[in-house]
Image (tube, rainbow, N blue to C red; front, side, top):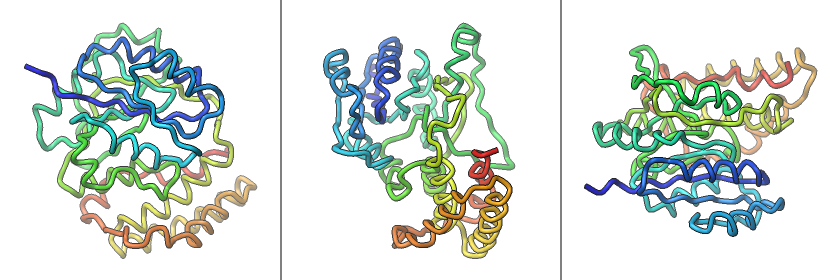
Length: 295
Protein backbone atom coordinates (compact mmCIF):
# COMPACT_ATOMS: atom_id res chain seq x y z
CA UNK A 1 0.00 0.00 0.00
CA UNK A 2 1.41 3.37 -1.04
CA UNK A 3 1.38 6.01 1.67
CA UNK A 4 -0.29 9.30 0.67
CA UNK A 5 2.02 12.13 -0.32
CA UNK A 6 2.61 14.69 2.44
CA UNK A 7 4.03 18.14 1.71
CA UNK A 8 5.93 20.02 4.41
CA UNK A 9 5.68 23.77 3.84
CA UNK A 10 8.15 26.07 5.57
CA UNK A 11 8.24 29.87 5.35
CA UNK A 12 11.71 31.36 5.78
CA UNK A 13 13.08 34.84 6.25
CA UNK A 14 16.69 35.57 7.25
CA UNK A 15 17.23 32.63 9.59
CA UNK A 16 19.79 30.62 7.68
CA UNK A 17 21.11 28.61 10.63
CA UNK A 18 17.62 27.75 11.90
CA UNK A 19 16.50 26.70 8.44
CA UNK A 20 19.57 24.49 8.05
CA UNK A 21 18.88 22.76 11.37
CA UNK A 22 15.17 22.29 10.66
CA UNK A 23 15.82 20.79 7.23
CA UNK A 24 18.50 18.55 8.68
CA UNK A 25 16.07 17.29 11.33
CA UNK A 26 13.44 16.68 8.66
CA UNK A 27 15.81 14.18 7.04
CA UNK A 28 15.30 11.99 10.13
CA UNK A 29 11.53 11.75 9.65
CA UNK A 30 10.36 8.16 9.35
CA UNK A 31 7.91 8.73 6.51
CA UNK A 32 9.05 8.14 2.96
CA UNK A 33 6.48 9.83 0.71
CA UNK A 34 7.46 13.40 1.50
CA UNK A 35 7.68 16.61 -0.49
CA UNK A 36 9.45 19.57 1.12
CA UNK A 37 8.76 23.15 0.06
CA UNK A 38 10.54 26.20 1.44
CA UNK A 39 9.01 29.54 0.51
CA UNK A 40 11.59 32.25 1.10
CA UNK A 41 10.37 35.79 1.79
CA UNK A 42 13.33 37.63 0.27
CA UNK A 43 16.12 36.53 2.64
CA UNK A 44 19.44 38.36 2.32
CA UNK A 45 21.49 36.31 4.80
CA UNK A 46 22.52 33.45 2.51
CA UNK A 47 19.50 31.24 3.23
CA UNK A 48 18.76 30.72 -0.47
CA UNK A 49 22.29 29.73 -1.37
CA UNK A 50 22.53 27.37 1.61
CA UNK A 51 19.33 25.54 0.66
CA UNK A 52 20.37 25.20 -2.98
CA UNK A 53 23.77 23.73 -2.05
CA UNK A 54 22.94 21.64 1.04
CA UNK A 55 19.35 20.57 0.31
CA UNK A 56 18.99 20.17 -3.47
CA UNK A 57 15.86 18.01 -3.17
CA UNK A 58 13.94 20.80 -1.45
CA UNK A 59 11.57 22.79 -3.67
CA UNK A 60 12.59 26.40 -3.14
CA UNK A 61 10.09 29.12 -4.03
CA UNK A 62 11.66 32.58 -4.01
CA UNK A 63 9.75 35.75 -3.21
CA UNK A 64 11.34 39.06 -4.20
CA UNK A 65 10.36 40.75 -0.94
CA UNK A 66 8.79 39.93 2.41
CA UNK A 67 5.08 39.49 1.69
CA UNK A 68 4.25 37.93 5.05
CA UNK A 69 1.95 34.93 5.34
CA UNK A 70 0.78 35.34 1.75
CA UNK A 71 3.96 33.47 0.88
CA UNK A 72 2.68 30.44 2.80
CA UNK A 73 -0.33 30.37 0.49
CA UNK A 74 1.95 30.19 -2.53
CA UNK A 75 3.60 27.16 -0.97
CA UNK A 76 0.26 25.56 -0.15
CA UNK A 77 -1.04 26.04 -3.68
CA UNK A 78 2.13 24.57 -5.20
CA UNK A 79 2.10 21.56 -2.86
CA UNK A 80 1.34 18.22 -4.48
CA UNK A 81 0.57 16.40 -1.25
CA UNK A 82 -2.85 15.26 -0.09
CA UNK A 83 -1.88 16.50 3.37
CA UNK A 84 0.09 19.62 4.28
CA UNK A 85 2.39 20.01 7.29
CA UNK A 86 2.91 23.64 8.28
CA UNK A 87 6.11 24.64 10.08
CA UNK A 88 8.09 27.81 10.82
CA UNK A 89 11.69 28.28 9.75
CA UNK A 90 12.73 27.45 13.32
CA UNK A 91 10.53 24.42 13.91
CA UNK A 92 10.43 20.81 12.74
CA UNK A 93 8.26 17.69 13.25
CA UNK A 94 9.46 14.84 15.45
CA UNK A 95 10.48 11.81 13.37
CA UNK A 96 7.25 9.83 14.02
CA UNK A 97 4.89 12.80 13.78
CA UNK A 98 3.93 12.59 10.12
CA UNK A 99 3.18 8.86 10.06
CA UNK A 100 0.99 9.32 13.14
CA UNK A 101 -0.69 12.34 11.57
CA UNK A 102 -1.51 10.45 8.38
CA UNK A 103 -2.94 7.58 10.43
CA UNK A 104 -5.35 9.98 12.18
CA UNK A 105 -6.43 11.60 8.93
CA UNK A 106 -7.01 8.26 7.22
CA UNK A 107 -9.16 7.01 10.10
CA UNK A 108 -11.37 10.11 10.35
CA UNK A 109 -12.59 11.80 7.14
CA UNK A 110 -14.11 14.64 9.20
CA UNK A 111 -10.73 15.58 10.68
CA UNK A 112 -9.60 18.75 8.93
CA UNK A 113 -6.58 19.75 11.03
CA UNK A 114 -4.22 17.77 13.25
CA UNK A 115 -2.78 20.18 15.81
CA UNK A 116 0.70 19.03 16.82
CA UNK A 117 1.99 19.22 20.37
CA UNK A 118 4.44 22.08 19.72
CA UNK A 119 7.17 21.85 22.33
CA UNK A 120 10.08 24.06 23.26
CA UNK A 121 13.14 23.03 21.26
CA UNK A 122 15.42 24.07 24.10
CA UNK A 123 14.01 21.24 26.21
CA UNK A 124 14.48 18.74 23.37
CA UNK A 125 17.17 16.65 25.05
CA UNK A 126 15.09 16.32 28.22
CA UNK A 127 11.96 14.93 26.60
CA UNK A 128 12.84 13.40 23.25
CA UNK A 129 13.05 9.86 24.65
CA UNK A 130 9.85 9.93 26.67
CA UNK A 131 7.15 7.38 25.92
CA UNK A 132 4.25 9.23 24.34
CA UNK A 133 0.61 8.47 25.04
CA UNK A 134 -1.62 8.65 21.97
CA UNK A 135 -4.46 10.79 23.26
CA UNK A 136 -6.46 13.60 21.69
CA UNK A 137 -7.38 16.63 23.74
CA UNK A 138 -11.14 16.85 23.53
CA UNK A 139 -13.67 19.03 25.26
CA UNK A 140 -17.38 19.55 24.87
CA UNK A 141 -17.10 23.11 26.19
CA UNK A 142 -14.75 24.70 23.66
CA UNK A 143 -13.22 24.43 20.21
CA UNK A 144 -9.53 24.90 19.46
CA UNK A 145 -7.33 26.40 16.78
CA UNK A 146 -3.81 25.21 15.92
CA UNK A 147 -0.19 26.38 16.13
CA UNK A 148 1.42 27.25 12.79
CA UNK A 149 4.79 25.98 14.04
CA UNK A 150 3.42 22.44 13.72
CA UNK A 151 0.11 21.40 12.19
CA UNK A 152 -1.25 19.04 9.57
CA UNK A 153 -4.08 20.07 7.24
CA UNK A 154 -6.05 18.35 4.49
CA UNK A 155 -5.06 20.35 1.43
CA UNK A 156 -8.48 20.28 -0.22
CA UNK A 157 -10.15 21.54 2.96
CA UNK A 158 -7.59 24.30 3.37
CA UNK A 159 -7.89 25.29 -0.29
CA UNK A 160 -11.67 25.37 -0.08
CA UNK A 161 -11.62 27.90 2.77
CA UNK A 162 -8.96 30.07 1.12
CA UNK A 163 -5.78 29.13 3.01
CA UNK A 164 -4.37 31.87 5.30
CA UNK A 165 -5.83 35.42 5.28
CA UNK A 166 -3.30 37.34 3.20
CA UNK A 167 -4.46 40.70 4.52
CA UNK A 168 -3.21 39.82 8.03
CA UNK A 169 0.50 39.83 6.97
CA UNK A 170 1.56 38.34 10.35
CA UNK A 171 -0.12 36.69 13.35
CA UNK A 172 -3.63 35.43 14.14
CA UNK A 173 -3.78 33.80 10.70
CA UNK A 174 -4.27 30.33 12.21
CA UNK A 175 -7.30 31.51 14.17
CA UNK A 176 -8.92 33.05 11.12
CA UNK A 177 -8.41 29.80 9.20
CA UNK A 178 -9.72 27.80 12.16
CA UNK A 179 -13.00 29.74 12.13
CA UNK A 180 -13.53 28.87 8.47
CA UNK A 181 -12.39 25.25 8.70
CA UNK A 182 -14.69 24.58 11.65
CA UNK A 183 -17.56 26.39 9.96
CA UNK A 184 -17.14 24.18 6.90
CA UNK A 185 -17.92 21.16 9.06
CA UNK A 186 -14.43 19.77 9.74
CA UNK A 187 -12.78 19.12 13.08
CA UNK A 188 -9.53 20.43 14.56
CA UNK A 189 -8.00 18.06 17.09
CA UNK A 190 -4.83 18.12 19.16
CA UNK A 191 -2.84 14.91 19.72
CA UNK A 192 -0.20 14.69 22.43
CA UNK A 193 1.82 12.04 20.58
CA UNK A 194 2.18 14.10 17.38
CA UNK A 195 5.02 16.44 18.22
CA UNK A 196 6.91 19.35 16.69
CA UNK A 197 9.78 21.30 18.22
CA UNK A 198 9.95 25.09 18.01
CA UNK A 199 12.64 27.52 19.08
CA UNK A 200 10.63 29.68 21.43
CA UNK A 201 12.57 32.91 21.81
CA UNK A 202 13.22 34.10 25.38
CA UNK A 203 12.75 37.65 24.15
CA UNK A 204 10.31 39.15 21.70
CA UNK A 205 12.22 39.16 18.42
CA UNK A 206 9.49 41.09 16.66
CA UNK A 207 9.67 44.25 18.86
CA UNK A 208 6.66 46.39 17.91
CA UNK A 209 5.55 44.05 15.14
CA UNK A 210 3.97 41.35 17.29
CA UNK A 211 1.77 43.61 19.49
CA UNK A 212 0.83 45.71 16.46
CA UNK A 213 -0.24 42.86 14.19
CA UNK A 214 -1.82 40.78 16.95
CA UNK A 215 -3.95 43.77 17.98
CA UNK A 216 -4.89 44.94 14.49
CA UNK A 217 -5.72 41.42 13.37
CA UNK A 218 -7.81 40.80 16.48
CA UNK A 219 -10.21 43.47 15.22
CA UNK A 220 -10.24 41.87 11.78
CA UNK A 221 -10.86 38.42 13.23
CA UNK A 222 -13.94 39.81 14.94
CA UNK A 223 -15.24 41.70 11.94
CA UNK A 224 -14.74 38.81 9.53
CA UNK A 225 -16.07 35.95 11.59
CA UNK A 226 -18.42 36.93 14.43
CA UNK A 227 -22.21 37.34 14.19
CA UNK A 228 -23.13 41.04 14.24
CA UNK A 229 -24.17 41.39 17.89
CA UNK A 230 -21.07 39.53 19.09
CA UNK A 231 -18.86 41.57 16.74
CA UNK A 232 -20.16 44.86 18.15
CA UNK A 233 -19.64 43.73 21.75
CA UNK A 234 -16.15 42.33 21.13
CA UNK A 235 -15.13 45.44 19.18
CA UNK A 236 -16.14 47.73 22.03
CA UNK A 237 -14.25 45.53 24.50
CA UNK A 238 -11.16 45.61 22.32
CA UNK A 239 -11.30 49.40 21.91
CA UNK A 240 -11.46 49.76 25.70
CA UNK A 241 -8.51 47.38 26.11
CA UNK A 242 -6.42 49.30 23.57
CA UNK A 243 -6.78 52.52 25.56
CA UNK A 244 -6.42 50.83 28.96
CA UNK A 245 -3.26 48.89 28.15
CA UNK A 246 -1.74 51.81 26.27
CA UNK A 247 -1.91 53.83 29.49
CA UNK A 248 -0.85 50.92 31.69
CA UNK A 249 2.21 50.04 29.59
CA UNK A 250 2.99 53.58 28.36
CA UNK A 251 2.97 52.68 24.68
CA UNK A 252 1.07 53.89 21.64
CA UNK A 253 1.39 50.67 19.67
CA UNK A 254 -2.09 49.41 20.60
CA UNK A 255 -3.72 52.70 19.60
CA UNK A 256 -1.82 52.66 16.31
CA UNK A 257 -2.90 49.09 15.66
CA UNK A 258 -6.53 49.95 16.39
CA UNK A 259 -6.40 52.94 14.05
CA UNK A 260 -4.83 50.79 11.36
CA UNK A 261 -7.62 48.23 11.72
CA UNK A 262 -10.26 50.91 11.11
CA UNK A 263 -8.39 52.88 8.44
CA UNK A 264 -7.56 49.77 6.41
CA UNK A 265 -10.82 47.91 6.94
CA UNK A 266 -11.34 48.05 3.17
CA UNK A 267 -8.95 45.09 2.97
CA UNK A 268 -11.79 43.00 4.37
CA UNK A 269 -14.14 43.90 1.54
CA UNK A 270 -16.28 40.90 0.61
CA UNK A 271 -14.38 38.75 3.14
CA UNK A 272 -16.85 38.94 6.02
CA UNK A 273 -18.61 35.61 6.48
CA UNK A 274 -19.98 35.17 9.99
CA UNK A 275 -19.61 31.66 11.35
CA UNK A 276 -22.28 29.83 13.30
CA UNK A 277 -22.97 31.15 16.77
CA UNK A 278 -21.82 27.86 18.29
CA UNK A 279 -18.37 28.26 16.74
CA UNK A 280 -18.14 31.97 17.60
CA UNK A 281 -19.04 31.28 21.22
CA UNK A 282 -16.82 28.23 21.68
CA UNK A 283 -13.63 28.77 19.66
CA UNK A 284 -11.02 29.95 22.14
CA UNK A 285 -9.60 33.30 21.01
CA UNK A 286 -6.91 34.74 23.34
CA UNK A 287 -7.61 38.43 22.76
CA UNK A 288 -5.55 39.37 25.82
CA UNK A 289 -2.40 38.03 24.16
CA UNK A 290 -2.16 41.27 22.19
CA UNK A 291 -1.57 43.22 25.38
CA UNK A 292 1.19 41.17 27.04
CA UNK A 293 4.27 42.24 25.10
CA UNK A 294 5.35 45.28 27.11
CA UNK A 295 4.73 43.91 30.61
